[in-house]
Amino acid sequence: MSKLFTPFTIKNLTLKNRIVMSPMCMYSCMNEDGKVTNWHKVHYPTRAVGQVGLIIVEATAVTPQGRITNQDLGIWSDEHIDGLREVVELCKEHGAKIGIQLAHAGRKSMTDGPIIAPSPLAFNEKMKVPEEMSLEQIKETIAAFKEAAIRAKKAGFDLIEIHAAHGYLINEFLSPLTNRRQDAYGGDAERRYQFLKEVIDEVKEVWDGPLFVRISANDYHPEGLGIEDYVVYAKKMKEQGVDLIDCSSGAVVPANIHTYPGYQVPYAERIRKEAKIATGAVGLITSPLHAEEILENERADLVFLARELLRDPYWPRKAAEELGYALTKVKQYERGW
Image (cartoon, rainbow, N blue to C red; front, side, top):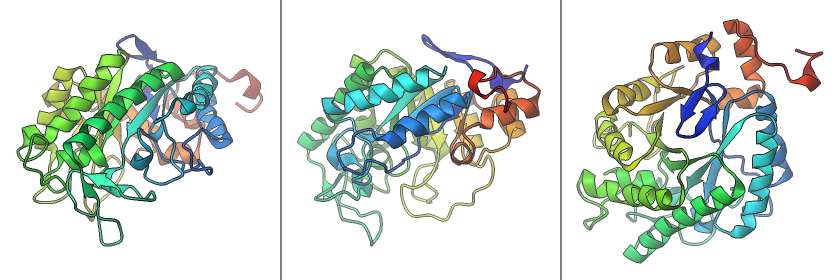
């Protein structure tokens, strides 16, 4: 039995295999209202037909201001629920489980109007300088994550992932490179964690299903955070009831990152071993044998595929053939399989 095709259970949720579609922005809300479009109704269910075990919907903004672009998906209004529910039902119809990534872009928002962040520091010279968040704005944003979790539950999602990576708002609070505050939400590592701590606590008040957090385990800057810091943060998240850490890296500040297949896997491995929490490995994983190696050597519990699933929605079929696993055939496609 290939480990890639073994089930994985988190709380009351069992995934049929360990292949996860990583959340990837589609920038496809052309009416700029955050609502699901026909694109989303085709894009996600196609991967479900392709036998992906878990699909995580792209970064979905908890406020209009929290979008990366005006074309991002949103979950700041009850008007978003019906469209999201339709995507959920279409994916579940084909045997996949489905989660949603709740997000706020912070200083990396390219939406119209003012943007907010922990400190008034622009990402680079081409982007806007954000307003430093007031305590009232912090409380409002934390509440927005909670309201988004309520809507995710109403839409029928199996799982929530909190986006705390890639230089977006929560990541900006965590990193000393982007958080220069000297109040309850900035300063030492404990206070920089406070924003994420409160987001997790508020989400868990209304959500009892599996909860993931995506992190950037390395800032790639000598004065930034590294894996040692995130082992500590992962332990805190585990204590709060987070079920899995999705281990990405970078993008909190501009950096030259040497990338190669599996370059982020050591972060997932170390957090799994030292924080004693389940992890997901992500980053240029394209080979079925590589995915199998990660799991067999207990470097991570799930394998997150991103661009490879854009290129090939039926990658699980390819993986099954290569690993000698008899994947259940999709009836309508039997002649081609």
